Image (cartoon, rainbow, N blue to C red; front, side, top):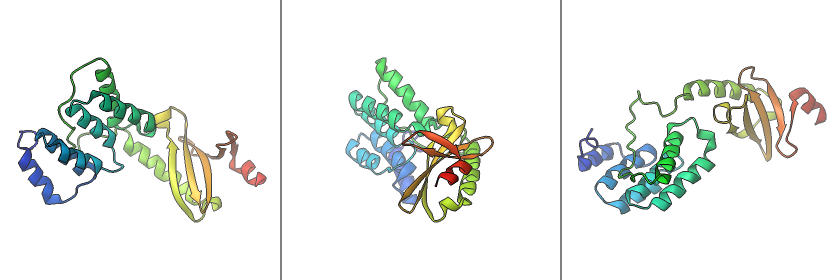
Length: 209
């Protein structure tokens, strides 16, 4: 509320109550300091966001706010190229729009987007449905003997981003990496070899081991 009515110092005081200075909170701090023209402090908070939704969008916003169009475009384009797995987040869509605007020489932004945390605002429109599927897939993978004692799981591709019918999931088990394709509708799991680019059923894969 304070931010929206231009009382940026009061807004900062409210943020200080929570004490968190990473993620969305860091973006909010940066937004206020940009409005106060304290760009050095704003940049320090941009740097403290961490690996968080909207981190590159906030950095691009910051560069626009200080009049550095070249760095803003570079940041936005890097985000679009490196963060394709998050196309279903609104930040990705906004980033595309900023690239289009800047390439058409539209006016630069003079603020960093302030994340309000309003629950009625959809940062990720399909996340609830996607999360349910990911949770079901995770439970199926956990039950596989090949994945016993796994150490990490990474979703490399999602149907919502690629338009394909399956998830590509990589599981690390000890010093091994196992790759699977999981159909988003049937949840059938197949083994994928990223070197040979071959996909086989679990039955045939197990016979070859």
